[in-house]
Image (tube, rainbow, N blue to C red; front, side, top):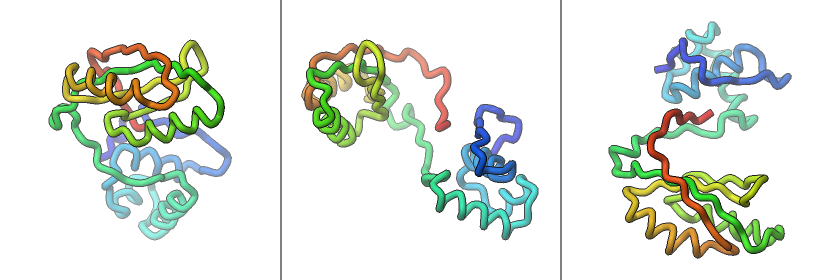
Length: 163
């Protein structure tokens, strides 16, 4: 259920979204399973106009989909490492090859191209340090154009949000 007191979800004005649209997005970000009737009541619209707005937000790509949020600890996947990756080659072809390969690795939850001292930052989730070591040695190090990597192990996730 959406927590109306939660101010952590920020939807900024973009000129195309009005207050109702932003409120719909805020509520859905907290509770993607809310019924249209309950959403409409919380937003202050009747069900039909709220449903139309919801469909429009989906069609325009503001809402990319709905999914279950799983508990990694209950699934035995509570080891998180952040990996700085430096590439040997940063031509567009090399970047595309690396990007495509990363998308195929289930243990890599996130991959960000970085402007700075290294090229990419990966968030890797495994069951423990032994499993992480195997992923690093057999998978991450073997990705296209990897020159080196540096690992930072997370001791505790203080905040994790979709937005």
